[in-house]
Length: 222
Image (cartoon, rainbow, N blue to C red; front, side, top):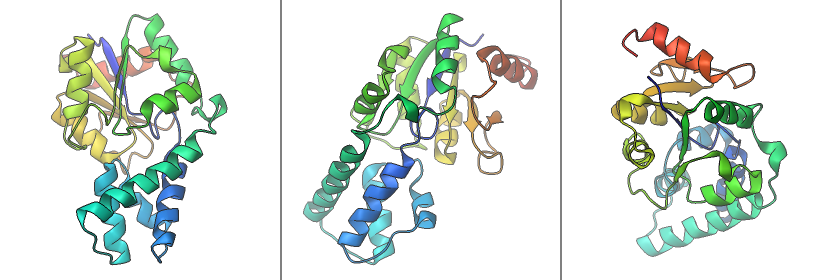
């Protein structure tokens, strides 16, 4: 029986990817090169410092630890500047309704995100109270596809991994959910999220019972 839903944040409940991209591109341009949308795809589901290393490699730039920290902090300042202007209208279609329905049916809910700005984003969206647990980059040290963030979320919810469903939009996140021994629902393209147990385009028209019933049909031991 499913008892917990664990949600990634970016690309699942809200689209902050555009703000990450704007901040990374701004950093790249300040260093003298461009950073394209195609380049940005390589950063999906990757931690901030790993993303920085990818960006620097694209620009052919080598940097010591001091400069890397300064670059990462500058990017984050620009990103926070962008997300501080967010509002409830940026919640992805019916995502908050889906979480509310899950809670009404007795399912525990958690956020599991690599973003260290998760509390600020939830506050700007006005949905902090929808989650029993929030695990973010301030509480973890290993990036997806390492399962650390999901395992910690389940532990804090006081649920076994087998009773949890992860909602993810990135291939690395799907891999992390599988490594955590959890069910996984991909949000987006089946071609990119083929390792997920189930893939939906959006939460529009989707209910928690649809998710649990379809997972039960796939895994008769659910």
